[in-house]
Length: 336
Image (cartoon, rainbow, N blue to C red; front, side, top):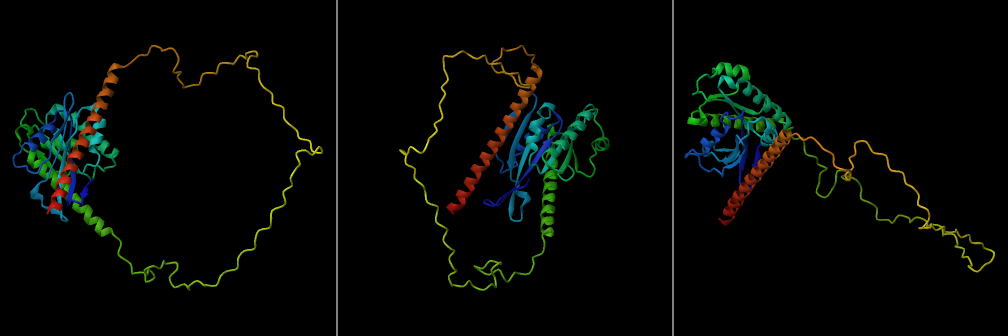
């Protein structure tokens, strides 16, 4: 989702690098961040897992110019490729404007590439993003290794269609910048199309309503003024019936008093039947019973919870960094 900050005239777009584990997503971002020609970049935030890392940073490419007077800022993200970090991948994909799918060119990685691409489409739908409309770029990485599939074979089993394809060897920096440029161009092209569509779909303005005068509502326009003659007041309500007072010493009136029956606290105890057990309810005071724990499943759940917490922490740190930058920019403008 494109974010527009009118206070500092910025448009922020989000680009996510997706793919199977160890395909080169992290290497791509490290090469981009380490490029000395890349200016106006923020702090890189890293979230490490056992076998992979999730990275984030943003930058403002000056050569892109402006869109409708707004400067463009690009946020780059990677996702962990392992299967058990699916919740983290869903979280990182939220609000994405474009995706670079990094495919491992090795023949042994064909099934992993297919599974990861299908997982990408599923998680995009979970985030209410149309997989067929998002800016999608394919990077065929590790082309320098032996036993790699041909570009045509990879495009066939990945169903790349008309999406841009870049051959790369991210470890050596080959194709990294070309992939980034193609992805940003695709995102901005989609953005311009959406803006044009929104403008063309706006209904034409109708003729002005002459009844819309200052201080006059449409319902009262042209109606005569209210008469100043006082309307007749409604008749007064009838007086209440007289209240009859009773003489408390009148012997003719019998007052019935209900007898209060007090229970004897020392009487015979009544046996109370135990309540029947309720289905599906565990008694918290019952004796603990032996349970079988799946240690591997618990470890996987804890790993996923940790990854989600770290991803949330990274997002909050990025938001804090952006807020500080906005404060500096606004303060500099006010000081002029």
